[in-house]
Length: 478
Length: 104
Image (tube, rainbow over all chains, first blue to last red; front, side, top):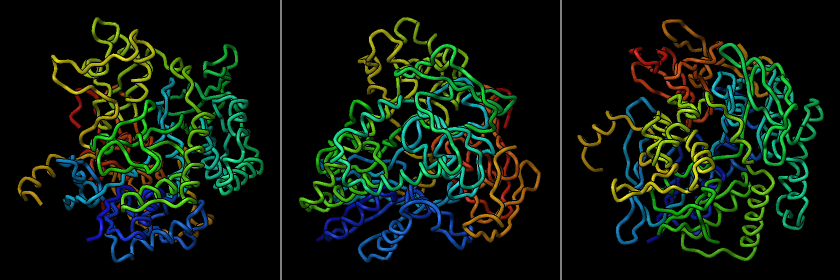
């Protein structure tokens, strides 16, 4: 009997894993939350939009479309689009975890499935991290990913005059998407100093030999920036925005190497939107639920075959480190192969090694500076859902014994709103470990009997309505 | 209001929008098949439609279903993320608030 590999995620990593497992004889179930394969990078304009040139925007659409066709038509591949995996159940005695999912549009009656294979590949991706600054909760502030997705796949531009701020090469394609469709991009602000970026990108150039495609893409973004006269400034950031009910102006400051704003360097620019990305947060709820250990910086820990610390569970793509679509595809290929029970050849191993080096280089060139924690003010909202301010959290932490994650959460409701901490938990945890004396307060106590509260722990990985749970009970186990 | 739809006649992807209408808090709003409810609202000039407990306005923030800033009631079902919900002709959207003392 061939091995049954379950892949969660239809982006570059998941699609590559599914293809590679199929090529090595496995039966594959490919689960994706979107309506079409491609993930965020190759997210397409919905079919219902009726466009005549759907592939004229974005990179790698042709090859992604070819891969999607292969997967959808493959006789050994079951493809489940619009599928929200809401829970993972760990297997007993080393069995592969079972995956519970709801298929369909949220709000409609969805179909429930439980899928358990011999191996599980998690390729759930990442989303923009935005560190709080005064005004970041005003309408008109978007994540850079939102600005990109709205422009590319919904043809909606977030503003007429926009500043992009944050760190990493991702800001450049966002600038391109906006500028080429008529937005005035006032500037792309990279918070890290140019010398740090240059040092890490210029080092060991031979490691970049498999990244020629990325270099071409980068050159195109730079050419677009020149064509549209978009200033690219390093060591600068939007540190606050203001306006009457929505963004009307943004304040830019020069930053030192730690991202602390330099006094006297502030200047204000009129804009109607700001798009921000201070790196990415891995979407690792399912990996944590499966029992996979994380690295110190919060990514899923994997070995040279992308195997996690959980038995029969592999991980690939942005949940294991930020490297972009090409790196994700190499990692997915390796993971799919290993999950199917095959070994990688020398050429794949070599590409995998350089992919890992690319991830490390990106992380070294574009870290989040600790000074970002000075940008928020006492009245700055840190938890967007619950409206918890920085002062409310620091007050909770200043009370005796209240310096760990869970008590502050319970006292202030930070992280307990609808998004369950997806946007705020990493920022609040960073602030807590900076401000609280012992740095790594562990609130797993014999008194509560609870596991250590982790910003990553969300037992229900996707929203499920009580009505849907009630209906599951009526239907019995499926 | 700054978010706006690229006009179909100048869009290089060559759009042929098929019209639909949704109702937002009782007001009809035009959209096109393929849009999400979030972009129907954005393109229609509404960049905010939810009130947070702090009183702050929320609309689209992450755009991909992670942040839940954009939730609203759709056809009687509360807390639907509009950025992930394809618009359908005749959808009835009711905005939500979490300001204390407000029932909605």
